[in-house]
Length: 271
Image 1 (cartoon, rainbow, N blue to C red):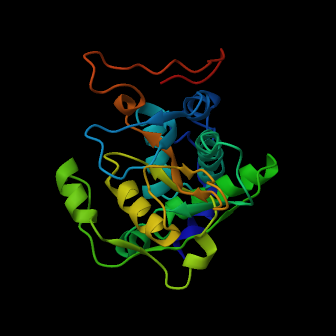
Image 2 (image 1 turned 45 degrees about the vertical axis):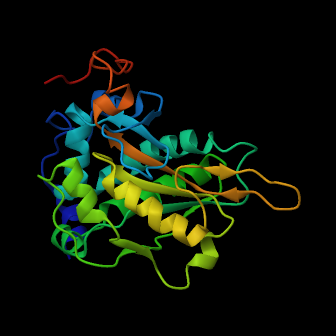
């Protein structure tokens, strides 16, 4: 009910950019540029949880990017899924570039599952919606891709917001698993874990553990090369729309890493 009501409401109510509030536009070009105007890069939280695969992000989680993600996830701005999916597709391409020798067969985008109560409260599964949009963008760009939602929560978990990195790890430990019977869809295939946001990496590390248990691989090693007559085994990489700005650089160093400013065009709405 909530999803179609929100889509109809967006057609009849006054529009404003969810990134900056600019009136009479569903999304201004400046805010769109904040999301898609940078090259996706590898991100590493600090502290980095054990078992975290290589993660690539399209943008830093601040300003307009943060506002757009929250509008889609918490306020049901479903029209943003295409833009967010395009940004995620760029991060997926960056992750796939780390696989030596190319990727055999279609790419499997595996969303990190949200808590069931959160999906019910929001009326949608935001990460899965963005993953579907990303798969479509990849296919249009010539990369065979499909969404494979094979991860599920095996036990209840607490709300992650407000928890420290250590408590988030403890909260997620052993919480995810692969749907019974889905292992055969994963063995020998390239799976990319996808989510809209990485903060501490606890959810992605647990998702990688569960996925690699089914794939019989090491979550920290994206590819095990072929040896003699043994075929190569493909592990897990991850891609997200956004991550904390500090995760884009060496957060162990003394200086704060700054992302390069996206290209800006004159005449855009500024708040």
